[in-house]
Image (cartoon, rainbow, N blue to C red; front, side):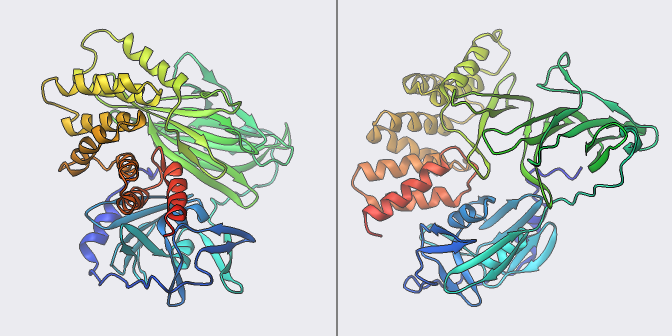
Amino acid sequence: MRVKILSFISLVFILLFTTAAPAAEINPGANAGDGNTINVNGKSFLLLYPSRPAGSDIYLALCDFSMITGCTYRTYPGSGAISLFKGARRLDLVIGSPGANINGRTATVSPAPAEVDGTIYIPFKFSASCLGYSISSGDGNSISLNYNCYIKISPGDPTDTIEDFLPRGADFVDAPQSGSSTDTLKPTKADLDGDGNVEYASFYKGVGNKYGLLLYNGTEGQYRRIWQKDEPFAPDFLGTDSFGGSKPFLLSGWDLGDPLGSFLEVYSLEEDGLDVLFTGLYHKIEIADLDADGCNELALWQKDQGDTYSVTILKWNGSRLIPMEICPGYYQKVLEYYSSQPAGASPARALYYRKAEAFLKSGNFDQAIKYSLDGMRLPQSYPSSQTFQGMRGLALVEINKCSDAFPLLQSALDSSPGPVWPELRLALARCYFEGGSPDRGLLELSRALSEGNDWPGFDRAYRMLGEKLQQYNR
């Protein structure tokens, strides 16, 4: 499997082998159409930042582009590099550079991405086409987008038994449903495409410790293969869930071994093929209604130091799985896990930090402050004192102590080397607004949104920026 973890190969290639170009000039007064809205497939999108003409293309703010296309993006402060992901496609760009990389293939982008006052702009049509969209323009600012980059499916002729689909010498195998070797799952089934008929998914093991996943439908004597893939990694998880959407998604996990853990892929079966909705690493996985809203969420536990974990809860927002900011009930469960640990199972500073994080995400901000302070007083090791200060600053903002939080947030953001931590910029923006400095608040919000859209709080920051721009008539 070509693991879709952040690979720096294409990023390094761009940074080393492209010639930097002057940043493209964006005229603040020139709009494409009315500049504040763009009509895509008959739906009007209100843009945070006006679109700008860019030759035969249109400049859109990166955050607005993601809302229209549903892509995921990340940036790498200090390098100017940008990575965008949609399904199985990846596009790498660099601010001010004509160099681009599309799924490992070099290309030239014109005009180049640009940054103005903390906001990153990218050429809309070029970027959308690289991510698998076909584009046609209508009148004014009306655009038609058609996503056509699905993983191809190839239903074949019916066969009597599903074993006919297996490679020679392969057999079906069970896979853990929740990371427990005692809890196995036979072939999982669900109506994945919403046509009223059930699809089945099964793992298999071939010769030479090779594995695979088979997706099929039909009944005995009339089975049809929909899609099949081979992997060099053992299966770890198989399941389906809709997460509150209109139809179930297929989830498959593959064991990469220590220290990485396992790799999760979430697929949606569409009429034209399979779409990859999410990929990520985990050591433990859980699917349940974690916030008592009637819809299931996805919890991924990724190992940190000792027996501590970074725990992310993902929720379906209608177009993609996004990380939740707060989930009191589930993070209380995380705290109970840490309380049950024997002494010395995890390095003390790492344990205090993860407890502070769990308290923050459970809404217990006073305890988050306490554990951040106590952890910072322990002998220096991982994580850094600036990281503890950032955690403490986040909690202080939540209890409206912005004057106390401000220097902590600044220190954490100014630390070098330090984490890329857009949540801190969102909190710092709130401090600036509270302190009567709206221009600085708007700048920090813009910087937070420019760092990526796969962090807890992105949707809140996006809404807040829209409200503040309107409030201050920017």
